Length: 435
Image (cartoon, rainbow, N blue to C red):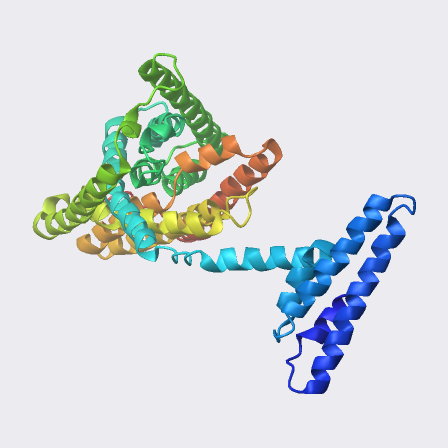
């Protein structure tokens, strides 16, 4: 049947072609009538009469459409007798329906770039405050004779905040279902900059190498110092994450009064009004805070080595860590390679900066020493993170978590040994802390 229809599609240009077409049409009609006669019971006179009437109707329909040059008219007449023609008509109607619809609008790239820019601005703002919180808590807990390292409380506090935010994530979803970039600023920006992986590896190496301060003890105790720095920090960080998650759980259910369908947080606000306001706020706070930090670094010389250089370099570290996680973490879901790369790279950098800082102190270059201290505390401190690292350990499968955690800690210690360790053991000098 389809070969006959394809033969009829060709345009008719002469009288011979008209005769051929008419003969083919008659063959089609007679062949279909013969098939239907074979299927109808011979004793059913009513069916035979209906078939004869149908042939007459087809003959009259054929004569009325002989002036058409297209096979579409013939198919329309023969459509009740052929399932193939019915499929063609359905396909044609579907095509016409699709063509009648307006074309889809291309994706709004401008909106996507706006979200990225807003996210970067929030990262700038919260990384500055995360760095200040880390430096302040370290100074508060770094008293002489402390039982644990000062950074232990930094990691614990940052993981508590991270756990609370991860449990109340739906608080930052507006009424139309869009996630707010403010959540990325609080978690990746503040918590990621509050906690630091590179400084943890640096302080653990100093305890293992007995480099700063120097204690008179057998070398075997250096192994215990290494285990103390790793195990105590990890245990408190994981405990802080779970503790913060419980706080977030009770806050969420307390606000909702035990009802799951209760609307709370930014869900009460329409994204049409909240998103533009938060975008403007992120630009003002993020860029304004960083410009203020740069101006204070230029004019306030007494605070440069303590905090100002650190807060100046901190946004760059946080943005680079966010970019690496955004591009690389999805490549291997069982091994967050973006966070891993940021942590190991930042650890190696802080080891190199400590060597350069030692040389700057030898040459009495106070400004260079302060800049290097700011790079260590600000850029490396925000490039690396413990809160995200611990959160990933809790969300991965157990075997993947063990592999990821062991690789991160082992390579972090090896990186410190290859940088600060080589310099310290070669020149037999204690590591320079501060300027």
